Length: 517
Image 1 (cartoon, one colour):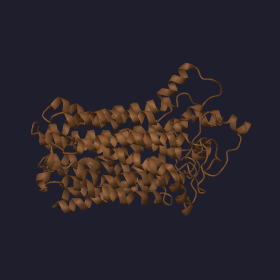
Image 2 (cartoon, one colour):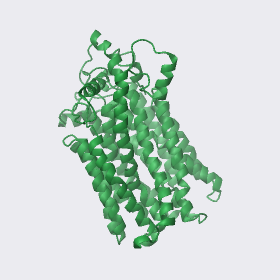
Image 3 (cartoon, helix red, strand yellow):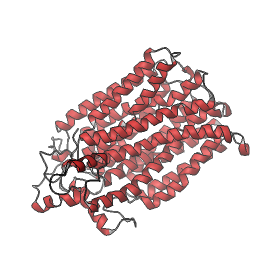
Image 4 (cartoon, helix red, strand yellow):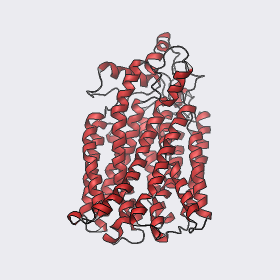
């Protein structure tokens, strides 16, 4: 996996200076690794949790970052995913009948959300270069929470389509903004775990949504004149408001612009030095030259291709409850509860991917492993008769296991483009936008809900997307190790200039922070 440049001077068209003795002496303080070889027990602790073998100052800083940043991004994304995916639970719990939804209307609910999401992502990233994340991200969450509650008052499906568009528009700030925020504070050896823990919160949200809808259907159906599916939107929206208010306090912006009261001056200085030590540079002005440099490089194109395949592939599991309902074997409560086991698998595998990729200091093999599991699941769904319930259940549950690879892609982008905050912001935004542009229309063709339980092409297309994802990962591995990164002048940049370092090219970067493809 690609990583960030050593020192603060590495840039796309710059050279890396020979480290001074004073720089080398700071390794223990800034990278967190005490001088000298660590005992086996401490190396094991570092694998379990990366701050356990660091200096006291580092441990204190990272503990604060985890307490404030990680806690906020997890609960915020938990609520965001509740609001994003609750339509599937509502659909099988009375929404279809209540709004007279037919044919592809469930897909259209997702499509209108996706259109808003696509439109909002890139502008949101650009706005974050002008408005601090501590203001922008919580404000967006407040707005989308209000629109979520408003769905409960909708009388027609067209009104819900409009609300879903605006929910997607403001939720577009969350994933790309949070991934950029995490990359601004955590080193490569720390980022994989945090990104995957953050990703796992989305699985927890989908699991909780099933439990919540089942409970509401049982206990709140008809209360205050509202059916249970409308109560789901009310509760989901209410959850988001206090989390957004918490974000105004918890988000520290970037190390160089941090004004958070929970971090003292010494900790802010240490945070800046940590990022300098792994080549993360502070923000500068975004220019046309920045965009030219981004589009001349391989990351924006190959990561876009890989992430498109990832997003289209994992779309399959969102139709699990539609398949369950179409078989007429389970009650409404069971249709909401059975998929929660799949989300439990998502959480387990996502966390396994995090620790495995950080332990071996590689992302590509872990992503490939996740894709192979999903391909097996799609093959089972394709070749077994739909009335073979044990086989079909096995296939469906295996498709849940690839989701965590998305966090590893974003971690990889943060590392490859770590030499420039502008590159990270732009590449993450473009990759997400491209992926969801395809998600806006491909599922309409692949998973027509009127075809359930027999999706004519959906299972095979999902298998193809996961297989293509493996191909893209292999090409990216070659691109990174072959130093294909293109600069403004169109010439190849060397490893240091492309955001890739290894222990052969740098003595200033802690070897634990060196993560290769």
